[in-house]
Amino acid sequence: MNYNSTRNKNTVVSASQAIAQGISEEGGLFVPQSLPKYSLDDIKALSETDYRGRAKKILGDFLSDFTEDEINESVDSAYTSEKFGSDNPAPISYIENGDTKMSVLELWHGPTCAFKDMALQILPHLLTKSVKKTYNGKEAVILVATSGDTGKAALEGFKDVDGTKIIVFYPVDGVSPMQKRQMATQQGENVNVVAIRGNFDDAQTGVKKIFTDSAVKEKLAENNKLFSSANSINWGRLLPQIVYYFSAYCDMAKEGKIQLGDKINVVVPTGNFGNILASFYAMNMGLPVAKFICASNANNVLTDFLATGTYDKKRKFYTTISPSMDILVSSNLERLLYHLTDGNDKKVTQWMKELSENGSYTVDDDVKAKLDSLFFGGFCDDEGTKKTIQYFYENENYLADTHTAVALDVYRQYVEKTGDKTPAVIASTASPYKFSKSVLSAVTDEKLPDDEFAMVDELSAKTKTAVPAPLASLKEAKVRFETECAVDEMPDTVLKSLSIS
Ligand SMILES: *Cc1c(COP(=O)(O)O)cnc(C)c1O
Image 1 (cartoon, helix red, strand yellow):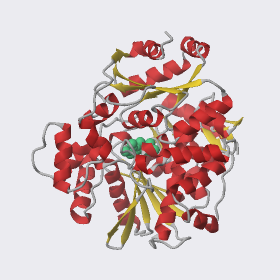
Image 2 (cartoon, protein in one colour):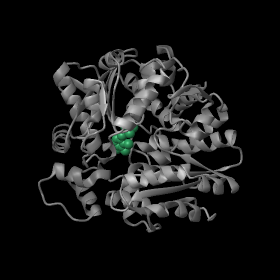
Image 3 (cartoon, helix red, strand yellow):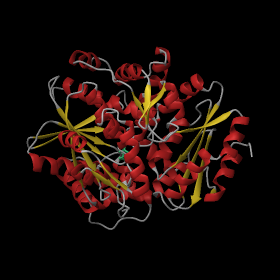
Image 4 (cartoon, helix red, strand yellow):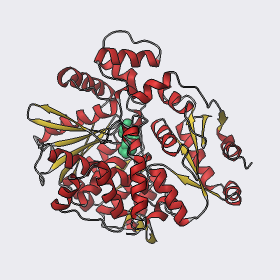
């Protein structure tokens, strides 16, 4: 199976090239030329194996230039019970509210307690194998700009992976105390973490500049290294996310929550549109999905897009209590547009050009009609998010994090508006303990302690739920990284950190 660029159909690359390269030369994203199709019998066969078995089948069908051994080795190293707490890295909590049935798919049992682990635990294995196939013998240098979750998940995924180095930049005052501590205490011999004096946009712009800086690139080439990216437009991050939608469906069928062949709805708290797009791919491969419910926070650019067909990023940016969804340009939407226009690369290129030059674009009527038939968009602000956390905690004995709460509330809005009670899979994307302050303030009226770890302990005492081990151990962990730099020092910092300046 080969891959095209969303902005140039004549670009044709192998799976390993798509993963090693990350993004196409003209700025497009790599998309599969065709999809494997699964019948109900195929899905039944998937349900008879475990998560790793399901992942091997699905990844194998997409990564046609990988050997079976390479797929097996990648999957078996990524989804261990040691890393995910059990043999099922994506377990479901069932909530029945009257006749509304919700299957909360918990994607945060990995080492960093956010759903990014589902992809970033396996990406390093896929990436190193891809680099070996396409740029044999070179060391991959992963640069990451992060607003919090991605940086830590990438560090955990790449730590001590042979043939890789990883450098993470985060805005010095732009991440939560817990996120900062998670990164500053990172283990591993091939990792580096640097705080930059600037905001997240500065960090991201700085990293993009390094990627295209020919002097820096030359230095790397001389030293047998090349830059690679672990961000969510890499096909190697999207593909592993398809697996858990099939896996959830299989588990629901096995546990008698649905019959094989029944349709489900999918509800996803959305930022860069990667997670929800993975469920769209799953449907196109044969998973019986009726509706995709796209949940946003106050940064509701996608809600407006789905309602009007106009994507307009010229709007106020809100800093919310669900920070991983604070985003105005959802990069992976480009892939959806490519598929909904039946691969019209010219049109996609035009819309993306309008977005970067004028800040907005409007899709055609036929694309809008397809969006209407498949998607529902809604949003929930911070106040609604806290109310939802409180409601589910008090009435359903379920403690949700702020991102999951956004999804739960938008799903409530959907059912209220449509009356559609098709069983729903709700993607739960983070542990409540990763956002202890907001979650605690939603479930208690008492004054909050000042210290992050005191809040964690209080949340645990109050809700009688366990603190995830990776977060509990941070309290005692030694700080390894305290470097700060200015934005214009980033290229130098990279070279120094690779000892090639
Ligand atoms: C990254 C993230 C999201 C958004 O996922 P996308 O794939 O970017 O849409 C939602 N919730 C959490 C906790 C995240 O870390």
